[in-house]
Image 1 (cartoon, rainbow, N blue to C red):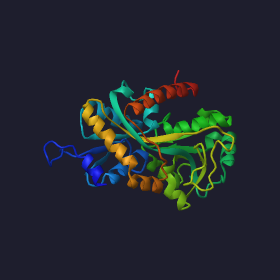
Image 2: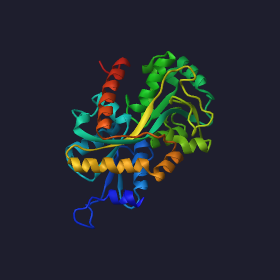
Image 3: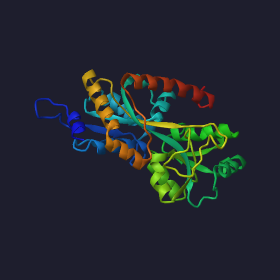
Image 4: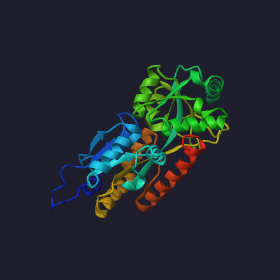
Amino acid sequence: MGRLVAFACLALVAGSCVEPGPECLAPANPGGGWDLTCRAVAQVLDGTSMRVRNVPGAGGGIAFAHVVAERGSDPNLIVAASPATTLRLAQGQFGDFEAKDVRWLAAVAADYGVIVVRHDAPWRSFEELLDAWRLAPSEIVAAGGSAVGGQDHMKLLVLARAAGFDPKAIRYVPFDGGGEAVTALLGGFVSVVPLDVSEVLSLFEASEVRVLAALSPERLDALQGVPTARELGYDVTWIVWRGFYGPAGADNARYEHWVGVLENVAASPEWEALRARTGLSEFFLAGEAFETFVDEQVVSFERLTVALGLLP
C-alpha cells in the first residue's frame, strides 16, 4: 500500500506534497453510494489524508456546479460519480452544464440495483409486490437516494414498464442519498426502496430488510437466495458503475496522475477485500476509454428518458 500512498502525493519539491491534500466530494448526504465510493477509496489510500466532503443537492447537481464554477482547475479534487450523474446530465438537470465540463477519470467497481422492502413487509416476493402495485399503485410509496427522474426512480419506471403498468402511477419520494431513503424505509415512512447492493448489504445480512429482486444479469454471491428480475421474466438490469470525475481545467499531467492512482487502487488487494465486504463487483475503465463510455451512456439515457415520457 506504500506504493499507492507515494503515488497519491504530488511533489512540489523533494519530500513535500501539495497543500491542501487530496479531497473527494460525495454529491449526497452520508450513507449512500457516492459517500461509500469516496470513503472506500480514501480508506484504501490510507496515509494520503484524503478528505471526504459531502455536498448534497439536486441529485448531484450542486456538487457538479461547484466543481465547474468554483474549482475548475483544482488539482487535488475528485468527485464520486455513477450512472446517476450521467442520467441527470442526459436529462438536462444540471442546467447548462454538460459532460464535457469535467474530466472523467475512472470507474473502479460495479454495483447493481436492488428492490428492497422491510423485513416485515406484506410482500414476500417480487411478484407479490408487482401484483399489489398493479392493483393500487398510488397506495405504495417508494423512495430513493436520487431526484425524481433520477437513477433510483428510473429503476422503478423501467420495471413498471416491463411489468405492464403505468410508470407514472408510481409514487416516489426523493432523498439526498441512499442512507436517508433507508432510514425512511426502516422507520415505516415508505414501503419500497430501489437502491444498490452496497447500500443495503449489511441490513440484508442482519435480516432487517428483504431484497425481493436484483437488477443484475445473474444472481449475486452477496445476496444469497435473491432472484434477478430477469429470471422472473422482466428483462431489466441496472448496472451502477462507481467512479470519479475531476475538474476540466486540471492539466493533463494531473489528470493522468489521478487515473494512475485509481488504477492502482482498483488493482490492490485492499480494494479487492473492500469490494467483497461491501458487495461491489469487479469493474475498471479509465482515461479516454472511460470518457467515451460516459459520452455514449449520456446519449443512451437521453433516449431512455424520452421513451419513458420524461422528456419531449
